[in-house]
Length: 364
Image (cartoon, rainbow, N blue to C red):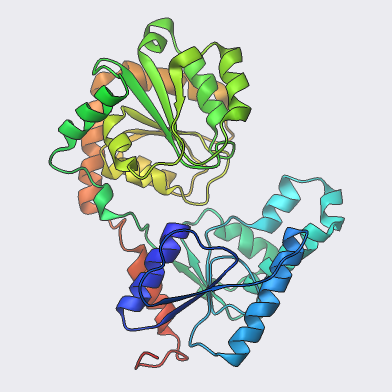
């Protein structure tokens, strides 16, 4: 979501518009011409902090109006909302006990979601997949004309370059992975929601001949400690490496033999498409919003819902054992990356943002 926010903002700027950003924190360089406002609010709880943030921003906007207010978190007063998060109300009613809906946290986040999706709201909603839309419509009755479905926005530099084989060889040599070994990749922060525990169980279930050749690299900014005990219990020993967040993800996509992404919940799953553009076969769960692209490309396998660990175990073993199938999936993935519109999210989002009559034809 942070990457898409920045690329959408830069695309708006490229069309001649000034950019002001309200945030509680900013990490990294500030693009030239951006006005970044660190909102000076504090509170003991997240709901209280977000309420103070919204009030502060509303007051500042009243003093310094803008043409369009675009939000990447649900809150009142938005002209456009980028729906990067799943439906809060659906999770509250299906994954929580009824008593949860009596608390202040529920009341806050439910109200802020309603401010965006209620029928009387005027907020335009940028959707990246159809997975969550039925939940919003069921809980809020959001008019269909307020939803704008966007294509994915994969960075073109994720595509396999001409020297992909050399990059693959270099990465595998760096991490001591022989060409005959089977390198699995799990990519993304939030190890729990991404299903790392499922991946570890599937890895441990492999037949001995495959397990001897297998290695799992986990790339993502999260704490590995909750999973170290599981690794020890499963007897995986040195089969798993945690590398933290990395800026060279494309190297791992080119160097691995299989992306494993058995997420519990995933609104989109850009990593699935990044793998396809690199020619990396994918094993994922059907709950991911972008999982259908894997099926469309015939570039891997999906684990159907309801999820069963035995199905993942079986699929992983079958995919690793079949070198010919992996080669075919890789070829299909690269062909799909050449023909599919999976790159234009940011330009299409800007089209929606600037389409409203309140945005003047001459940028201000």
